[in-house]
Length: 125
Image (cartoon, rainbow, N blue to C red; front, side, top):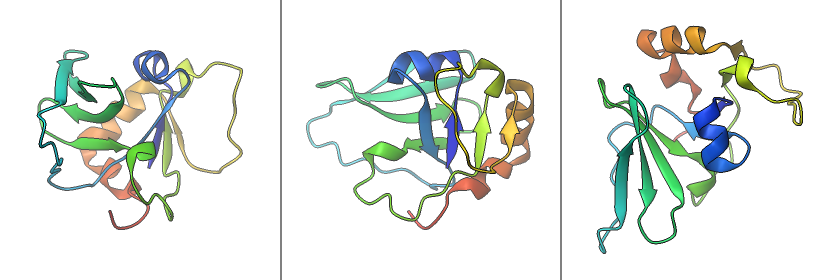
């Protein structure tokens, strides 16, 4: 799982975002057609619930690599923080004591491009 401290994630969630990568093909049970997508940047889009506005997914537009918001999983036991990304944007009002790597936005972009983000799932999902 990656912890993102970028401005967009902080504004959307109110603090930070925790996402699980390496989820493979994502299938969302959406019988009412409530999943909505918006283009958050030139590189990514975000999926959210059209009823309550809860943020659910983040997806790279070019590759389709998808992250599932950790707090939306029915069973998140076993998840571990694999990396912190966009750490140069992290505000001073929170801190983590884990030893996971801290990556700047530029380093995170290279990390995603290399496929290394896929190793942060922290267990079977």
